[in-house]
Amino acid sequence: MVHVSELDSDIYSLLFALLNASSLRALAFSSRKWFQLTVPELVRTVNLSRSPRQILEFCNFCLKYRLCPYIISLNLSASAVYSQPPKNYLKGYVRGIDIAETALFADALVEVLEGAVNLTHLAFEDCTAVLIESESRIADIICCRPPVLSLYLSGADASSMRKFSSVSGLAHLKLHTVLVFKCDKEAEEILDTILMNSICTLESLSLGQTLPAILRSEHLSSSSWERVHYFSMPDFPVNSEHVARFFPNIRSMDITPAPWVTRELNGWMVEVPPIVQFDCPPKTLWTELRSFSGPKQLALNLSRHHSLRRISFMGLFSRYTDASEFAQLSDTLHNSDIRSLSLGLELVGLERWVSAHFSMDDAPPLLDPLLSTLSQSANRLTYLSLHAGKSLSEIPYYQKRLVRTAPLLASLSNLKYVELGVTMSVTKMSFSPVEISMKPEELARIWVDSVPSLQYLELSIICEGWEHSWWRIGSLDSQQRTMRRVSEEEGLSAKRWFDLEEWK
Image 1 (cartoon, one colour):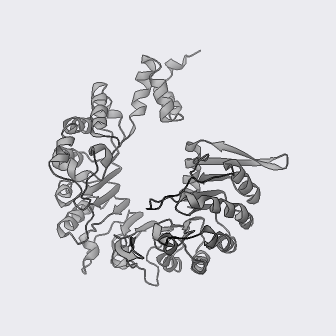
Image 2 (cartoon, helix red, strand yellow):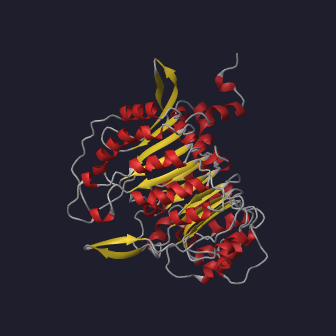
Image 3 (cartoon, one colour):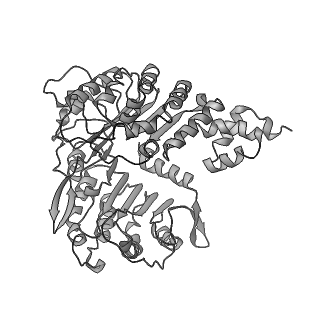
């Protein structure tokens, strides 16, 4: 009989893929043999977000045990690069102070990147400019041997972007510059160059505050990125037909909110979105478009001429605040064969929040008309993500409504996955501790019994006695369907399938 420590490396890879990170770490420290076997698996996907010291320790660890070739995905966030986040977000960082911190790990990081010959995904989140200014060799290494799958650069400026102007052969690019409120022509031209270098390989593109100059130009070129199937950009005044000309085969589109503007409301300074600027003419622009995330009006316009299967209204200013808005939602659902829908409800309107006195009893009962609309207009819906409210004080009200309204979805015979959540936000108001008498399994049982087709239920309602949980629903047992809490890994896997894959 072969001992477990004598298996082939391929078998180990299959076994380790079934374990989460904490289990792998426990196995690694159980013996020297298991350390040698499991550590390469532990460094395959790395997210560093703690401090500059953490980056240095990780780099030294990989160099000491020669683990760099095993790194497949590496993500560095701003919280790992800065001991304290930058105070001036428009600039992104403060020269001198922050560069002194990156000097602690810059040389070691260069060595790791040089040795990570199998790297396929690299992300610098909100720290690109300071990393490149502190050590320009980082960009040189990436341009000489770019990740073959994806490159994510945010927190970049024109100077740091220029260092990447020769990168080529990318399949996935996410490039978000530091927040600016005016066009940066130099950065736009550099972005044009970066895109042209990957015109034959690029499959997904996510843009931030800087758009390529070609999208603003009145003169259309003959170039087009025909392999791009995912496209994301802010809600800027751009001709949608230009976008369709350069990216004709988009299957999934995400239009994110443009920079907010600040205005006064009842003595409070609140941020509100600008008027929707990206729009679609009354014709088909993308024959393969199936998924859309963005403004509600734009979704309606697209649904009239595109066969949408997935829609997401999860942005703060895409939330529903009044029952009268569900007529537009009904039209959007009728126009397309929607299988996946994500949306949010504002249980308490903005005017009530900035008011000195408000009562949850006065909140409009939006769940009832919403779920009635879905039962009538979304017959083939498979995935539903519903988030409501924005504070702990709204959870008891939300839970009561969820109990009462669950039967409204009983007629949706294709509904397999439902997420029920509360969208939390930071406000100036403080509330007393909330007493929650219901237990998570009680709410789950009500929904399981009310929606016969349900296979998974996700509860993202975080409060005392509750935590983020997933429940798998089985067949009938003693006149009740079985219900079992499952791991986060299984829950997220099911979520990805029903939200992003099942309808394709």
